Each structure stands twice: as structure tokens, then as C-alpha cells.
Image 1 (cartoon, rainbow, N blue to C red):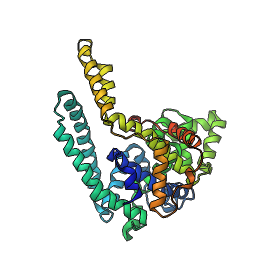
Image 2 (cartoon, rainbow, N blue to C red):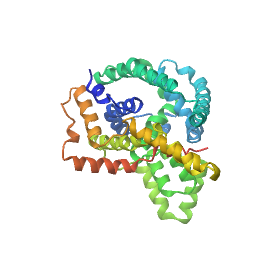
Image 3 (cartoon, rainbow, N blue to C red):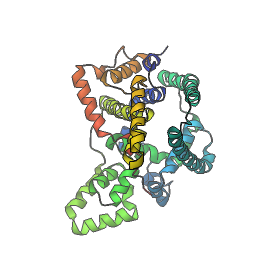
Image 4 (cartoon, rainbow, N blue to C red):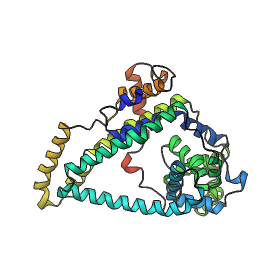
Length: 358
């Protein structure tokens, strides 16, 4: 049995799987940051393979990136099917939103039966055993070799954008390029500076190009800062230790959010806030009973400092590096404070998909 398997025992399976994937990809996350900085990934200007307008349109079409990356993950040899999957992924997201509305309704009407919940749990357990763990073993052993066709994906602008712009933005600034782009269009100079450091080509987007032109004429000092950002790129130094604590902070933050969602606390707060006065006297006791039930049957999703340390220790053991992750050696209080600082840098899970560009 993997050490990561033992770590996941008794924990909320969906988030345990997410945490295992995050922890095992700390090194590859650092590699993405480093490669995006040294321009080893294809760039628009150097290759000329991507139409500039098509590249800039990705800032308004984040679903294209999601769909292409999903296709690459599950079917790396079917490059030509990407256009069909783009539409399919859009339809799937709409279905998911409808399902979420149905879930809320069923929670209120009692249609979310214990048998349905048990079926969901059995499905998750089956996926964990038959799909997730075998894939995890491949990653830990280094058997997940890149297929020969992988280089073909670098011919798709969405794929290159995900690796050279989206992932570095998310890791370095805890924000997506679509969030930064929308903020920059609204006049946020700090967001524009961050975006220019990762992707200087965004300066050619019409709205931002006009803004930069106005700054060059009327606010030269601010324009100089932005111009230097585009020329120099990110300047912060990154190490594997820093990436691990950043990802550990993400897990600490999002585990709380997942727990609140799984236990229905988000729904509880929505009902208490939006309930009409004539129903408040009925809803408050109902919410109180739900909260007590959640206390009696905790889902064990929240990750504190010892749990995160144990997670990275398990990765070190399964990869044969050591019996413990040396980046997490030290006094528990100092580890906790460092993780807590990184957790505060991340946005709440429920806020991460709100500010997408239209």
C-alpha cells in the first residue's frame, strides 16, 4: 500500500484525491514556472505559428483552454477532435450548472435520498480504486512517459497558453489570466503589470493598447513601470520549498471550503440570508438540525498543518526520496505560520470562477 493511500484513509475521498495530485505535482509546478520564464515554451513572437488575434481572443474565451487541456489529459492522440470538444465542454458546463440547481432544490425538498448518497459514495470509491490510484502509482514511479504525439499539442494556441500564461499566473499570483485581464481592462494597473510580466503580447489587445498609449502620453512614470514589467518578466525567485508551501497553503484554504460545501454550510448560509420573513421561523430550526447532524458525522476534509506535513512526507516515502519531506522539517508552529501565510494568498474556492472575462 502506498503511503499516500494510508494518508487518505478516513478522509473525504474527493478532496483527498485532489490533495494527492497537488502534492505529487509540486516539482512539475516549479518546472512550469521556470520554463515559462526562460521562454523554452513556444512563444507567439518567436514561432509565428499562432495568429495574434486568435491568441488574444483566448483572454475572452477561457472555456477553449479548459476543453483543450481536458482533451490532452484524456485523449492525447486525437488532436483533430479539439474543435468538437470545445463545444462539448461548453454544453457539459451548462449541464453541470443545471445539476447544481437541481441539487439545491433536492436538498430543500428531501429528494436527495440516503440511497442516492450511498450510490455517489460507491462511485467515488470505485473511481479512486480503479482509476486514481493506478494513475498515481505511474506518476510516483515516473512511468507516465510523455507520448510521442505530445509535441503536436504545441501547435494549439490554447495548450501553449495554458502552460505559458495560465499556470504561471495561477502559481505566481494566485489568480487566472482571465481575472487579471478583466481587472486590467477596468483600469487596475497592478493587474496589468502582473499580466505583462507573464505575457507581454497582451499589450496588443485593443483596450489595453489604448490604455498603454494614454499612459505613455500623460503618465509616463506609470508607463515606464509597465514597460519594464513587459521587458523583464517575473523577477521573484522560486524554489521547490516555496512551491510546496504555496500548494500546501492552497490545500489548507480549499479544504475548509470543500468541507463547508460538502456539509451544506454554504446552502445553510444562503437560506438564512435570503429566506423571506414568513419562512424564517421554519428555516432556522432546519438549519440548526443540519449543523448538528454535520457535527455528529464529520466528513474529515479539513487539512491542518500536521495533515499537510504528513501528505508531503507520504510523497517523499512513495518516491523513495526519504522517510519525511525535508522541506517540512522544523517546529510545528513555524510550519503552521508559513502555511497560514500562503493560505491567505489564495482566494476562496467559491470566488475563483467569478471574474472571468466575457
